[in-house]
Image 1: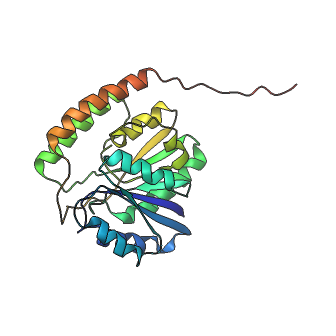
Image 2: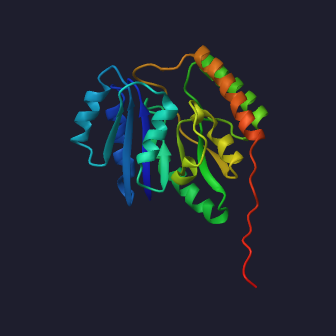
Image 3: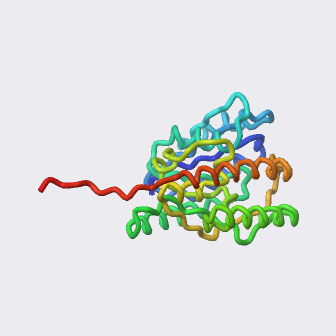
Length: 243
């Protein structure tokens, strides 16, 4: 297994060290890997904690945004500097379980042998540990998005995903694009499968996103993705050989 693990963080000083320790333990059997933490303009002790972690975790790379640019930009920054062909992303709050990464990686590799169009294995938090309101709003958002985009993905909000770096970099970039990756991949001609993954309650810190903020941004972004989808054309390519 060779994989770049990209983690966008903002104000997660209390969670980042336990998460890094989990990843190192899980990846002991990997052929090669790197952990890229993108600090998206944190104003707590996250930067200091990451500087200390650099002295202890050999596989760790830290990228710092001077100003917060949002989760999608942080993810893109990490993927652009990644050195391996396969990328795994997960959130920095500790709710995603790093133990799921090898399993999703193997599914991507095995099923790619059967279908070259499989570009991503997406995590599905089928047993979430969140507040009742968060669960309700997420369920509604996934239903609306899935109905309009037809991406057949039950949980696009799950930060745990494994995919091919080059395919991701072909996708159109925009703020909040990480919430629409399955639809964007399908639009580009790829395939996505969803796999149940472990989900844990947040033990420290707090969510950086409000429900209303997500609602208004989500409506605007959804209209934009619908626009992109309607204007996409995936050609069937055949090279003509000399007779």
